[in-house]
Amino acid sequence: MLKWLRKRQAVPQDKKSRKVKPGREEITSLLLMGRMLANHVKEHGIYENLHDAEFKVFSQFGDDGILQYLIHQTQPKKHTFIEFGVQAYTEANTRFLLLNDNWSGLIMDGDHTSMEAVRNLPDIWRYDLQAVGAFIDRDNVNSLFASAGYTGEIGLLSVDIDGNDYWVWEAINVVDPVLVVAEYNSVFGAEHAVTVPYNPAFDRTRSHYSNLYWGASLKALCLLAEKKGYAFVGCNSAGNNAHFVRKDRVGNIPVRTVKEGYVESKFRESRDADSNLTYLRGSQRLKEI
Image (cartoon, rainbow, N blue to C red):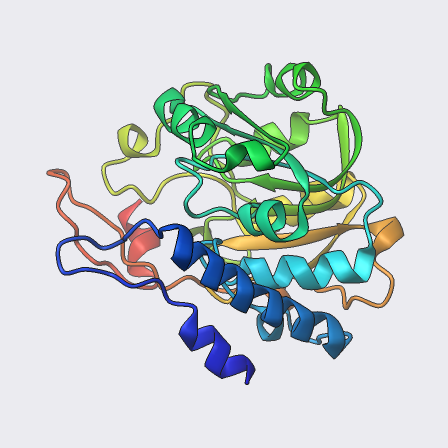
């Protein structure tokens, strides 16, 4: 049944567009199937591999399912989230939590137009969501959180800004999340702790034409997580998001080493100097940068 439901989740697509924004009926159907999948995940108990808990409703890949599992296991007292780097919030790690679980949250993106569009969604008044347009760096992140009323313990922090992810997470000290999702760059491999140097105006396309030079390696994020009191519990099967649980809430969730949990992405998003896709694979991507 779980596999059948996962297949049924796909949003219809037309021939002209890679993505179609789901309408109200489609969202209702997605939420219904997502709730069934979430109940299945919760009833399962402990997963040895996070991949087995995956399902997608609004997350880019299977992180909706992983988060439902981790939340059920850790039982955060504060049903609140912060996510930044959400673009138009059509694909996000927290939207299912907002619509299905009625969590409160703060989302931020450097594109002010996207945040305005979120604030103008037809039914957004039903939910406690703040959408703030801001370009986030390590010097303003804490004040942005505090000015929105987010300090102390929160349930979830999701970090995805395609650049200074390591440095911004390192700087965060006004909130104490139970769970953290942080995007990693699998092109850097599993062996080395690597991050791009801090640059408050970092842009991945301007930094290297290939669009592959950004963010931090999984090992770098795991070392930072250890310093901040978090345990690494695995990555999604797509190889782009790492999941961390605050050590006082890990319980029976299996903790992983970098070697055990690393997943290499299969994304072929590389570009040449003229911005044409070159579809580099595997280790070819690292050689390019």
